[in-house]
Length: 174
Length: 262
Image 1 (spheres, rainbow over the protein chains, first blue to last red):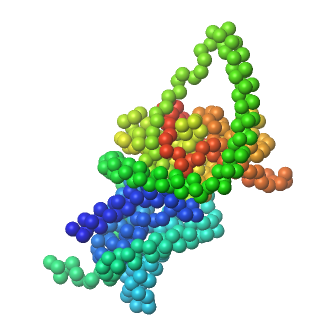
Image 2 (cartoon, rainbow over the protein chains, first blue to last red; image 1 turned 180 degrees about the vertical axis):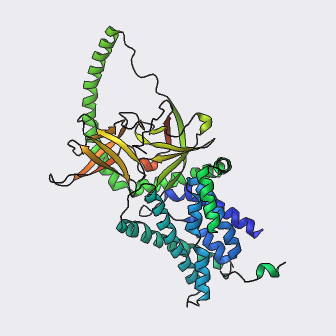
């Protein structure tokens, strides 16, 4: 049931991303609600659920915005390995810190990859603009959005979960 | 997961996903309508409040322009009467009766600093085809249809960084190409001729992708010295592309792209 809610939330985030997000740009950058929902699924749900939601998000967002779903899968893919890495290397950060770091790193990667996709398609871009006009403002927006959402969710009683896949979990469940 | 990404990329290129995309767009359109109905008025309100200063300046400029245009209209009306008289005398039909439009609503928009694509609620069922030209309700060029499903079409706006339109300055013959720039701006790469701030930019029709004479906007700034080979020219679109809600698709114009324009 929770998995279905996660998938439905991801699809709704994609619809929200193309209808509402472009109406409220900040510094000509739009908030990435799809990424936010994926991070929340990984941080408050399970990594397996996030693994299902990433291709769902890519397909839904790709269909709605006429973007390459394959490119979007690659854009959001680093979220889970990053979350796992931050947890296993015992970086001295709490759950919010790890979630925020995974979010901003994935957000920066996603924006860079989408810019690269546009450049390959014929757009002209200079490094300075990509860095200061796209990546850094986007990073700030992602962080601001997560900060706005994270605390209310914790106050609602949601507890932060581990982002590492429990090894052998699948076989032990058989 | 990377294999899945490659599979999706391949499937997207081959077109296997197109039917699913059409169904998905149809399923999600009621949700989009509700979200648009709720949030568009809020965005318009906020946009208007935030741009009060700019709007005041624009209003003053438009008042002056309006006065000049009223004077021009008077002269043109006189000319039109003369032309009508001459046409009647020569027994010619007046006006281009072959231009056909289909009205459409913008249902959503994918805007980032490098892309500017909108989705409209008309598709192949409404005789929309890839390559058709999309204009504002007042006739200013907005973009071109890049993909069509049964009920929706995707339009790449001229402010998208992948858009290029061959253009000319009205009346002077100076020509070049208008390109989308990051953050949804327009630049004019001048191939030849002189250019000044305020000049009207229209489509040149070269390359066959756009009909000739469609208004694009006006020259907003020209920078660079007389020594420069190419001056940096920015163009202000003739329509507020960001807030457009309704568009017209010109269905009579079948593009003959020679690969010069996108």
